[in-house]
Image (cartoon, rainbow, N blue to C red; front, side, top):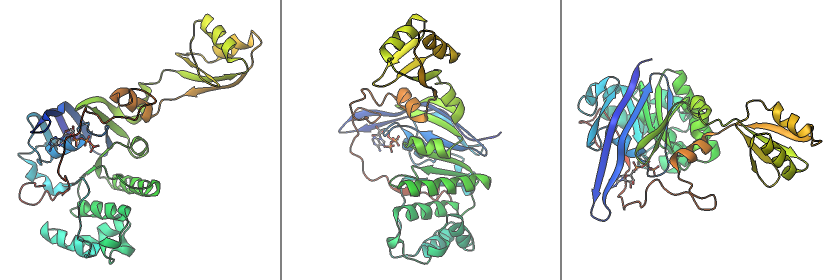
Length: 336
Ligand SMILES: Nc1ncnc2c1ncn2[C@@H]1O[C@H](COP(=O)(O)OP(=O)(O)OP(=O)(O)O)[C@@H](O)[C@H]1O
């Protein structure tokens, strides 16, 4: 597998009058290989957008080494810009234009044949609605149009920042199907999100960022396996007595309202045998597999207490202006 994106030791600190110095990215590493649908996952404020903006030359990094399709970024990014499609934050479109007209204009501006327009509208599932004005589009349709604009140049690499932001479950499913079809067509996709279920469903690989640092990376199933504590849920008539017996047998037991969780279990028959020998019959014995949500919360520490709302991955969010940008990497360098 060849590296499509490599980031090593990326650092970026913002200085604001109101909040002083804020380290947004703190020695972050990322490796995306050809053919992956790679999830870039992190809580709000953890540094995802800053990383993508630095990678695309939209913000100057303080330190670090970055390559895109083998070229150093941002200095040599123009050499591969024609092979990269990127959307960072939701692009704005003229509401009075149709999708078709919008894409034709973007194609001309990017030196792409306008014959691509029908192809990308078909690809994102907007073929039959492409002649309607964008102001009548749903959020999901606008997101599709954004992806269509990034696909105009038939990129090998597609970078999407929070593509499912604001979409309902149906829209998220459609976005997922779209990304899968792109991956099947050979496009490498890097998709950032703070929506865990989306990443788990869409992506085969994941990199998790917290407070500007990489806290986990790898195949989704491998990352999850690393957090498998071999736990089992046990339902039994007398949980208090069962917990005592299992504890005496050397097992680690946590009591819950109507069940027990037994950890570090190599052989689950030990549980049923220990209880059965004392006349306690097990009603349910099922393995508890970690999901990305529990791994994410554990790694990013954004849920400090179960009764408190989850916090952003920083102490305070500074006042920021709109960060909306549609990126045409073919245009004069790269610009927001
Ligand atoms: N232009 C800026 N000026 C000052 N601080 C900034 C700027 N851009 C980002 N930050 C800060 O850097 C940190 C990382 O922000 P970033 O937008 O990269 O996070 P994110 O992971 O993309 O979050 P979200 O999921 O909410 O979009 C945050 O604390 C943010 O407030």
